[in-house]
Image (cartoon, rainbow, N blue to C red; front, side, top):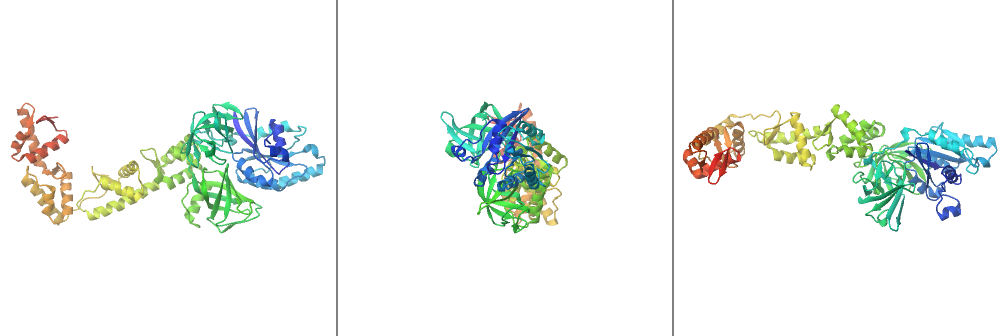
Length: 636
């Protein structure tokens, strides 16, 4: 079965609830007050099956006092029935509701003229239709289907059912990707013996019995004990279905209308949003920069400050990019549609689309920011994904996190990432995270600054120690993920931008350029090691004999790197020719002794003290050339 959400909209007392009862057999007015007053106060829900479609129908209040409730019920609607009573025609709430519908991104609609049994005057009917056509002109409902019906005698009700199905195609079907599961809560209650139950319209994704979910914005965990769709117990619910979830591990008091259920860590609660804000064509008030408004998205409501990024004032029919700074956290996703109402007086003035859920705080009239928002507003999914990776590279987002940010399935995201990799616009690091080429360039600039300074101050050094370079690069990039920094180093090495000489890092083209003074210093140091042979001076002794201690240390390391010296430990180096002589003669003695040699025997070969012989043997053990067994060594 394919799941579709149909919503009704229109002025109070134009017959929305009666129409739904005629279509589905369900009376959506369940409250005593609704029965008493004859008007809808809370959103009502019904369902019907027609062919291959399971159709959820939402009955929203039409009275102006309950617009807030109406706003909380229209999220996720695929097809709207714009209900206009033939006895009254287009009325104030008809217009307000329609402006709201136009703003929340609904793609399809049908104009339903109700109370056909009460009106016989054909001229009046034509006038009502002319007003309706004028209302929808230039909108998503221009040239839409329309039908006259009577809920009283059933006139054209069956034809309306067929018309609903004819207006449905695959473009209206929601994304069932498991990772995208999201259910805004519109009712919370408890049932004896079962515990906490929430209901809502499953906006996207899939949920199954036994799944773990997170409650946003508070990030509390719970488990799904059982799932119901239209009062029937099921194993799983899918996007587009009215769903009731029995939750385990959470109390009723910890939930409220407007909270959102989703997979753990799949939403990013935020107090700031980048949006495209559009004013209604007949908005009664303008929105000035800094205005406070009521913000509605799904079942969520919050007060927000409007920061206009392109102008100082937004009037009827105008639009611009802006940043909404909320007074409390909410959990939404990119491309969610929203509505705003003026703070006081409480009138609906506009709405729009969310472009970024976790933006930085923007300055007004920043051309770079405006350009980025224009791309997020009108660019292709691939272009927007590339822009998100450019902005969020330092956050090291993997495929799943990018899919959630883009509101795409894993398969869709993986396909787009593959294209961007092929185009060499992004890179994939070892941890499966994706970064933009710009981030590589930022890393290279940081590396160049670190290494250039080091090379300038340490002309005789092969390079900065690998660990120190990693630490400095982490600090420069404000990057705490050590594995990611290592991966970035690897990318720069592969690009032949930096060079790894074993335990030191240098710029790729760096070479030691000796002055005559440095050449003399190197020859003096090497001469000392050659003269001392097996009674090696310590590094501290060499440093104490020279004024230029820093370059002396670097030259010792450089001599070891070139093979002129062998580094036994942090204090002892040995002339390489002396070392080779020692190893050759040790091997000869071991062969003579039947495969072993003692420390004393090795000391006698070298003609030195026990201390120096031990330093050489320890190095040979660490290098896996020899192995100590009891009080002697054998060859490995």
